[in-house]
Amino acid sequence: MHKIYTYLKGGIPTMIWNETKECMSRDEMTHLQSARLRKLVDYVYHNVEFYRKKMQAVGLMPGDIKGIEDITKLPFTTKDDLRDTYPFGLFAVPNSEIVRVHASSGTTGKATVVGYTRYDIDIWAECVARCLAMANIGKNDIIQIAYGYGLFTGGLGAHYGAEKIGATVVPMSTGNSKKLTTMMVDFGATAIACTPSYLLHISEVLREEGLIDQIKLKAAICGAEPWTEKMRNEIEQSLNIKAHDIYGLSEVMGPGVACDCEYHMGLHVNEDHFYPEVLNSATMMPAADGETGELVFTTLTKEGLPLIRYRTKDLTSISHDKCSCGRTTARISRFKGRVDDMLIIRGVNVFPSQIEAALVDVEEVTPHYMMIVDRVNNLDTLEIMVEVDTKYYTDEIRKLEALTKKIGHVIQQAIGLSAKIKIVEPQTLVRSQGKAVHVQDKRKLY
Image (cartoon, rainbow, N blue to C red; front, side):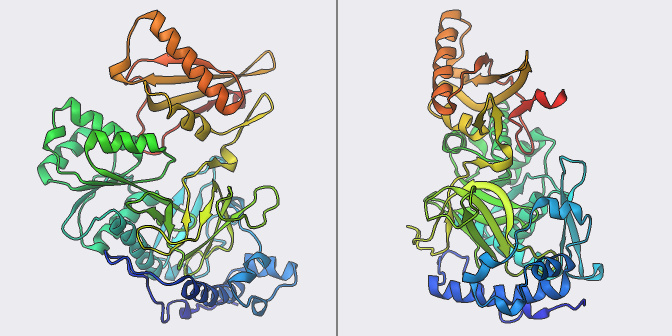
């Protein structure tokens, strides 16, 4: 049954990702998406046994998909499907056509493996380049890539995109913050790509080293973990830069699936390559624009690992109106949490993002926090360690008690549960160089 359909490559118009911001109209985009979906369904039916069996099980043939409006007829794909077919069971091409593999770490001990053809790498680089253009990063910039290199998609994904747009790339990776800050000054870096929590750590190192006034940084592309507007504002103010949110996930491609522009009114999806759906979490039917639901992606042009209706588990909303920047691509809102990040504490659904959002309104604290969930005498307990901003820290018991009470009230209003609040000194909580960890669920140890 195996054959490689090179027609996925043929005649593909690309959206302009430079400073002109020119984009297709919605009608043109829908027409392109429909054409690519028809080809994709035929492609996976003939090249991926998993999808062929899924379609045959419901009596669906490739010819039944006439346009993008028929996408709801197609089956979902989940991370468990990738694990069940580990390592290469969902690949649509032979290994001789795969030029690179990446993998995400698996909480169950088995990673999800992604394969890329040379064409996939080219498309990935273009999508990241579009994102960098939204941050006004171009060929005259020097960009430090401070995501991890290797099986993680962040480092190489950002690297290839920066080269595509013509910037000078400094492949710093993570692990040596003092060397990074030294080179940032010596090389005159004007941009950086890393996780937002790591960038906050870098700003702290710059201040400790007395280098904050010597940097030429103007922009940051941050992703790989959720972050709030408060964290963005703190980054921008501490470094005097513009910080942009980039989104991606290894199963779909890596960084570059979406990014926000200078107006920060949602992340523009590269929807000529990744078709987004936001579905009601209870019914899995399409949600209205502005309504929160689970984000689902179909990869319209991938050759190596094409995915149909992949459930990301990310909770967001979508908008299709024209952005103030002039772009017409669909925009997804800042993520409100993940379906699988949900904690059930004393019967109440709690997302870490709710805690972070609540702490935004507390001026005295930093974005660094840790939730500790435990079970004592068969009763769930929640403790939240909150780090105080340096300029507000005091060892005066009365003031600390007042701040603890204030934070506890804000948290209870946000999640409907009381929590034990523990104030910790500045620089106490561990700074992550990758994805920040905000939850310790000790109940899992029993």
